[in-house]
Amino acid sequence: MAGFPLEELKEKYRGWKSTPIEVKLISATQSPYDTSAASARTCYSSNGLLLPADMRKSEKSLETARRVAKSTLKSGHLTTRQHAHFIFGITGASRNVIWQVFHSHPYYNSEQVSQRYVPIKNDRSWYTLPPELAEHSEITSFFDNAHRDYEKLIELLEPRVSEIYFSIHRLKARQPDAHRTDIRKRCMEIARYVMPLGTNAYFYHTISALTLLRYAKMIEHFANPEAAAIILQMVELVLEIDPDFALELTEPLPERQLETDPIENHRRNAEFDKAMNGQYARFVSGPGSIDSILDLAEAALGYRPELADLLDSARNSLPGETLYPVSMDELSRTLNHLHFTFQKKLSHTADSQEQRHRTLPGLRPDLATTLVVKPDYIVPALLREVPAAGEYFQESMHKTFSLLEKLYERGISARNLTYLLPNAYPIRFVESGDLLNFYHKWKARLCYNAQEEIFYSALDEVRSLQSRYPELYELLGPPCKVRSHLKPRCPEGDHFCGIKVWQIPMQEYNRIL
Image (cartoon, rainbow, N blue to C red):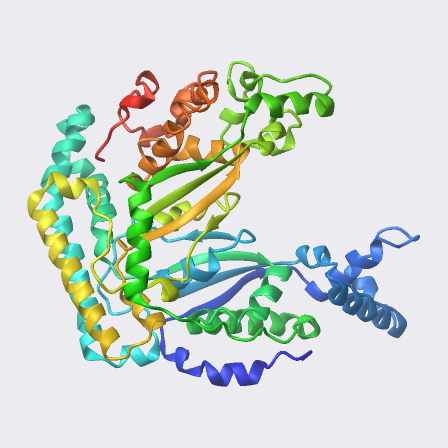
């Protein structure tokens, strides 16, 4: 199998079969191997478009297809492997591995069950642990207690959340029972901060054949046994529909050697936090001059655009459109050449959403190499509104980190300990990207319905531009601000936040729910 040790890897990770992880192949491109070969041969075909079926018309056709596939793979001409796609349905993968591996790159699409809006049921299948941890009664008790804390926080938060909710949505207060579900969802959004990263999820995950080949190449390098167990199931399912896919698999890279020193990590984190000065996001760098980029654009476009031509909805409606088709517009693509970098600090649960802005690359850590076992966590603003809930949350965090420290001293590996970290655990990272994609994120995340931390992170980013790029700052905001040309101003429909945010200066933005 071209050096890919499938059977050896299956034996190495067979212990993971006892976990709730299950992978299904929901849909796939027919004949992915032949599709790759046909697309490659079409590039040099004088007989028009070649189809996958043409690759097997004769022994000679098959021989040519395999020769072309082998040579393009060896030389790195890989776009041919992007035509075939696979839709996987994955159940039981931990939030830990989803964040660490499957959502850590740009070449995928996922739809994942929400911890914000779907309650976590304590049915003993809501978390996934490495097999060696699952045997510890102390650890299974820890997960049971975490779920109890989750339910208790929902109970403690509900009265105050109801009060705030009905102060905003006054008409809904006439029928309070009809809106209990909305209120409980807002409580769940905060209560999830105590849940461990071993909490699992079910999700759709769509990737190209090229991404699957890369997963297989990195299966050992990730140094993540759960990821390896999932990738092996993906590979086996594809081999069932196309055995020739085995010809594409190459020898995996060696495992990455991991080292961690919680004391040294704690020191580095303190330095990072000092630079952040209490913010979720800190400006690091941006274009020296927006005007200089617009000057350069003149030669390419045939005229010099103004910033308002690109972002003012009165002149250019595209940025306000919900489909955001700006990458297909030559004028809007000017924004690709204005780059920004920010230093960021978000909880793991918030960054799991921030991470989905895949066109804004983030330099995120491997948790196993940056682990700390002393208390280190983000406290949501709502917990400061409810002292009893805040105190209960602090107690839960103390119990979590006390166990982490004890288990670390016992010799439990850093990789395994990451499954016990709470959703509140901070991710410290650097995020960079161009204005075309930052604009899309800011528009979405400045909405008052956005998750609290990402809202304030986006607000920190945009506010940092006010003195540096005042003309840009005036053109930024949530959908209801930038959609002045569209009605209704808010695209959220029944989910309207209840506040006319477009009438509020951005410097006055403030929210609890």
